[in-house]
Length: 334
Ligand code: SF4
Ligand code: SF4
Image (tube, rainbow, N blue to C red; front, side, top):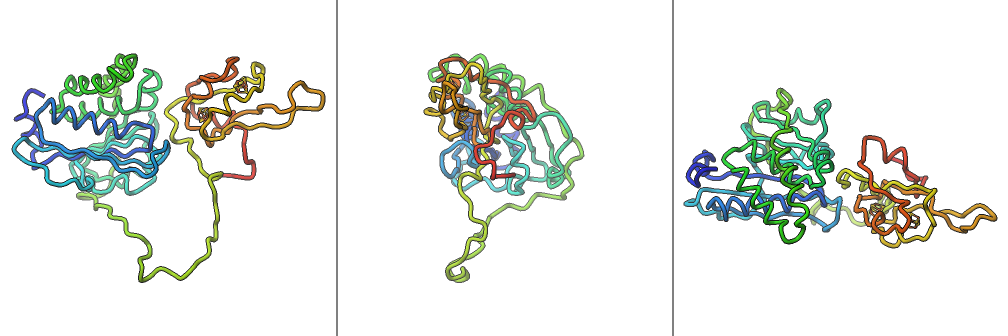
């Protein structure tokens, strides 16, 4: 962006608002922080940023909000962004939730992460006049050893040229220069591919006008809730499926190299490892049989801790986890 005045004029209205829709672990909060930092500290705009999340855990829903305005327009609200100019979706699985689209303006921009292929039917909920862009953020991030947020920031800057790509890249570099200097070059490659490897999805939206905002109300209030109750479908964490929180890689187990020492299981935060008894007369009484990827979030702690190389990090291709999965609870289906 050449000047603060250009950016402010480019907004065309009193503010420019972005909502990042994500799940924990993909870097939506950091993306919002970098965008707001670049806009406020480097471009001289007014801005506000905050995120909302439940438990701070990989796999939980995260929304990050950025509100920007011209330098002479104070931002006096810190409410969530309900009617954004741009929505950036970090995982295609979120397209199943109608609140992901909520409030997008009729001339808004919708950016989502997905590999090439047929556009999901859910995109029909978008305004027909909105701009829809697809980028394989997790695929690019895995190939470039970066994070999806670097890719999606590149796409956002390409979609809105009043954000200077170079300025945003400086903010991104600054974010990682001290914490992970080795990531600076890979983030830059990912950012630049986010700007170029993007696909415009024409004609997918079917809705007319601005989308309605979502203000979810609880089903019951203090006057209407029933006394007591029965949970007809009890569940527990065995039903959790955190596989959508992985960012492109899984640990792959090679039984021939395993000495069944249990180091991987000690460091795994999610009890993914499946053990069983060795056959009578075998050296190992208890043996590692494999990994249940339903619970694996791809943190790679197990790979780092394995002393024999029996666990290796591999890019996750479609169906790979299903093929290699050893169920921890075979009775849990779906
Ligand atoms: S750390 Fe490696 S060798 Fe030890 S049980 Fe796990 S996979 Fe096997
Ligand atoms: S990558 Fe390894 S340690 Fe991390 S959740 Fe998956 S199995 Fe557990």
